[in-house]
Length: 330
Ligand code: ASP
Image (cartoon, rainbow, N blue to C red; front, side, top):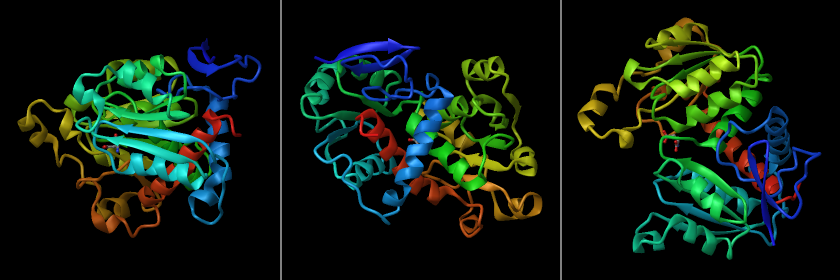
């Protein structure tokens, strides 16, 4: 019988809590980034680096042979779902999947916790995307197998943030000392909520760029202050482009606006152009969790610093690492 243990605020599901080795991930849920320690983050980065050749299709592996991942995506997704499923397949594991609520028992009124208790009987781990903040936590509380949050409403997207961090390491060599511009919809963008919590472990300077109405939520900003992270807030994209080593663009989250007229006001507010980059800072790294809907001009793609498609490949490696760690295979 698996039990749930709480250690330093993290949930573990295993026969024994491993108190000595906090980087033992077996049976852990990944629901948000705040509870991850620096050594845990670095362990994920190290394992991801080790499987990068598999993600790049240069090597093969059957590390997760015999394991099944249930992928439950109740909100639209292309990259994240395919990325998790690719990660599982390339490590020799299998995937069962549900896409959208119409085809699932949720449409019949089943509770999230009942769904979790059913799915854990089929699978060794569950990855969930859901429109409601906290919905994935609810499933994790009910399930005995590891549960991974693949995005819950406007709240968090921890695996995206981990792959973003991994990409910064790959592109820049070291995170300490970086000036990072985080641009766009910082209110509703879940990837940035998760990312800044990870960056808070490093000696970075953040330039938070958003319209005043779409600023980073107060509780996240207070968290940064408490941790002594250097940050500035501005509405001007050029403030970041002039000084940043990395600019992380995001889209305005249309689906989170109740009033579409409000969304229209903001939809094209930031467009990173090639001219802007070449004028101010030709060496900077440009990132985006994708999909982009106009925030980065297409001719930026040819620049060496355009890292957003490499980010996608890195994502497979990071998700492989997370699956292997939670399933106790590394
Ligand atoms: N793909 C990311 C997410 O699911 C970013 C976005 O949709 O803007 O949050």
